[in-house]
Length: 105
Image 1: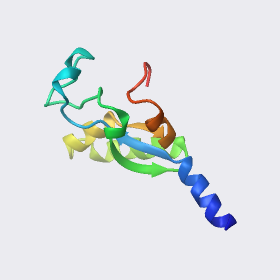
Image 2: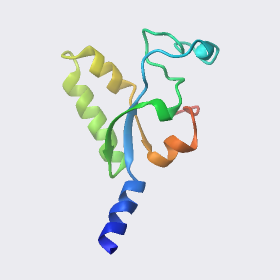
Image 3: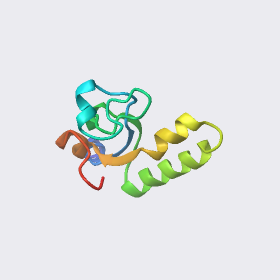
């Protein structure tokens, strides 16, 4: 039972690597440049709709994975590289606590 409880605790503290979806809704156009543009990532989308690329135990591991994956995709897969360049590391709790990016995130 203790082992199971520890595993659940680690899942609650997981860092998620997420990237914004493409496109957006017309009413988002007033929020920021690039919002609601079908040809670009929608940084105005709620964090709960961002695409999860991985889960990690620490923020450092999440950031390293993002950087390593972006470096591997550079010059080989422009779409994947662009998604990773805009990817962010957040805790699952942060994603569900606030609907959108805060200034500086």
